[in-house]
Amino acid sequence: MRIFIAGLTLSAMLIAGGAALAGERVAADVSCMATAEKLTYDCTIMLKGKKSGEPVAGAEVVVKADMPSMPLAHNVRPVKAAAGAMPGHYTATLELEMLGEWALTLDVSGPTRDRVVKKLDFGPASDESGHEHGAMKMKDHDSDMDHDGMKMEEAQ
Amino acid sequence: MDDIYLITILSNIGMISFIALSAYLLLVVGEISFGQQAFFAVSAYGSGIATAMWGWPIWLGLLWGALVAGAAALVVAIPTVRLRGLYFSVATLAFAEMVRLIFEIFTYQVEIDGELVGPDGSDGFRDIRAIYDSNVSAFEYMLIIYGLLAVVLIGFLILERSRLGAIFRMIGEDPMLTEMQGLNVTKYKILAVVMAGIVAGIGGALYAHLATYVEPKIFNVMLGVHALAYGLIGGLGTAFGPLIGVAIDIGLLESIRAISGYRMIVFGGLVAVLLIVRPRGLLDEAAMHWLRGRWRGLIRAEN
Image 1 (cartoon, chains in turn red, cyan):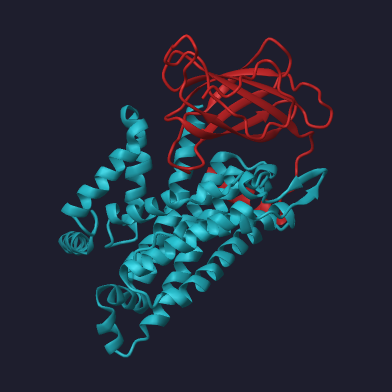
Image 2 (image 1 turned 60 degrees about the vertical axis):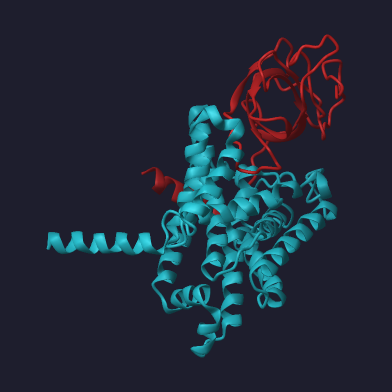
């Protein structure tokens, strides 16, 4: 039955040629910080309307990670982001399989539906106090929002 | 989340099966290609441009991607198909790297709804959203992937039982002997390269529309080496061989979470061991001959 429904959907797509859904596009800023657990990162996601600049609150955000240099090879379990303290803020904990550049796909649904892809470098964690995985990583390659104090600079 | 995870893995297995089948077809004609990722890439970009920038319907975008990949394969085949062995392999690798480097600098964008859409060099190509905006669920898209894979697989099974399939295998065994039968080996090899390019292209177009984002780095040699390895692991006796290779890598190794971070090392070791123990893979020609014999025996016993 589901195959039949999928077939009908495909037929509808072929006819419609891909009609777009209405809704404002979402801009996302992502920053991640290494946790004490190896290759585990706490990520903060800030969502706002691309044109209006209004925070996107009350959304369901699913984060998927893929490694561009090894496409289809690393299947990291997707995680659902939890709503943060401020409107438009979400948090998610990612368990990656190795260090390097990852593309995070944010699937946003709820008040608006959108997909945003962000590339981040997850480097080895180390901080001045010498904790093996105490602090951080990252470089958000394509951030289209102003960075605030939550984003850390590249450590290494 | 578990459902999304499972669907993602199954979709990945389906999409990479196309490039695995593509490399397998060339292995059948006796050539090792390290460059099938180039056709995957050309189609990913080509189909993405068609749907995201030119507004073409999805089915036409997928068809266009596959045809562009086939045309690219023809361009590669004409000068390289006379090369043998290592020389052909190096030529395909060089071509694939050339394609990747071209995409590193290729910029072609148009403004759609106030957004710049299109390839932007090494920053990649975002918003290939024809499938996403059509509200197709991940499960439905997975069914589309497997529907197209089934069509391609049936095509391969028909090919293997056809005169053309026999000629391909004959070329793979001994091209000189094939030439002595009055067959134009060069022509048939060009045909095989083009067919392989089209198959890889279908996978590339599907991948671009699932991911909604592609960049040159995705199409590096790692993808081509994996595509080749799947056939060598699964076996060259049947088109199911490369699919078994994909299932072992992405399915089995993925399920063993303890080795997840070391999967590439385990996979590389597996390829090395199999090349020594079973040079033509698990389902090689001898294994398929034995299986077919057993199957016929069972049918006879039932009758």
